[in-house]
Amino acid sequence: MSFEWPWQYNFPPFFTLQPNVDTRQKQLAAWCSLTLSYCRHRKLYTLDVMEAQESPVFNNKKIERKLSVEAIQVVFEELRKKGNLEWMDKNKTRCLIMWRRPEEWGKLIYQWVSRNGMVNSVFTLYELSNGDDTEGEEFHGLEEWMLLRSLQALQTEGKAEIITMDDGKGVKFF
Amino acid sequence: MGNIFGRKRRPTRVTEQDRAILQLKQQRDKLKQYQKKITLQLEKERLLAKQLLKDGKKEKALLLLKKKRYQDQLLDKTENQISNLERMVQDIEFAQIEMKVIEGLKVGNECLKKMHEVMSIEEVERIMDETQDAIEYQRQIDDMLAGSLTQEDEDAVLAELEAITQGEEVELPEVPTESLPEVPEEEPEPEPEPERERAKKQPEREMLAA
Image 1 (spheres, each protein chain N blue to C red):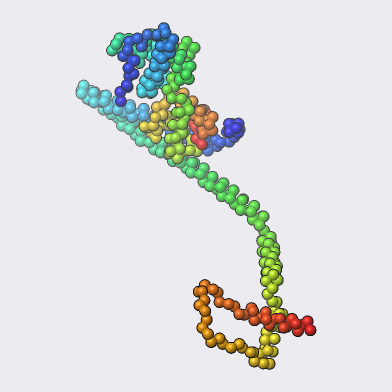
Image 2 (image 1 turned 45 degrees about the vertical axis):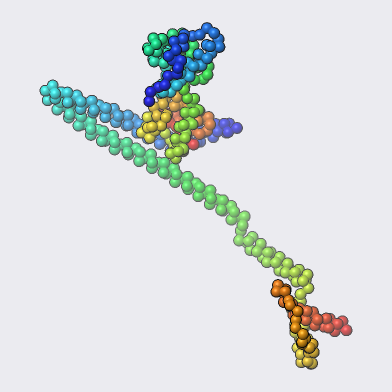
């Protein structure tokens, strides 16, 4: 399944931040949605600003345009404001990207658990994200931090409880 | 609100057994990872052995195959251990379910007991007696209201009937000769019995009064 680029992607001015406030707003919104859908397509959970510049999202080799690091920072900052992104360090070079909110992931996981009659069972995190049983589920291969957050979201709803043990974590669904 | 209570209840929701299961599953995960590692290694070594054979290094290839064989055995053992662990997990889970069943039975038993305490045999007997009394009482009231006769009255009536039939012929009215008018079907047949009785009772009362 190939990724469908939006029309703006082949529109050179899209790769330069626009000075007009209104235009810029629209441009940023388009960038945000492009970034999120691209990450969703590639199942990316962390991004590096420097690397991002080389990735096809921000670098359209066909029209020889790429978004500058500063502009990428602006886009990322915009995503952070929307709650889709979190910086991993103070220098803002790496970030966690959440193209699906933890609550939604939690819902998906819980749906799978209840569909398989495994409410009231204990799971290891590895089992959930890498086990044979979850093969083909959307959350298969989910990075641990994201998995943990979605489970925490479920925990606040009272549908799960995270168990911490010496070597690794587990979760029990209710 | 659920949150406040949820937080308080939380520590009790994960039992010792859950922790044990988690530990077993973690162990299993480690074995699975190990399995993955070995499988990948095996694949690599097989290719390497092929390469060595091509290059004419038979000795080395043989050595490599020996190593591979050993790892194959390891893989088998790992498989066994994983299934052991999984069986254990299932056993624990099933025991947990059994425990819950017993708990449920216990609650039911207790509930039954409590209800039985409320309904002791003596109590039931007493209630049944009282009910019987009440039915009797009600029947008496019914009798009174309906004005039906007591056994005594009944006897007296019979005695009188005897006296009359022995003494004289009862005068019967003549049988009418004309045909009867058509009667609607649904009309119930007239019951002559109570009327006659009442008629007989009348003179008796008069006799008593006299």
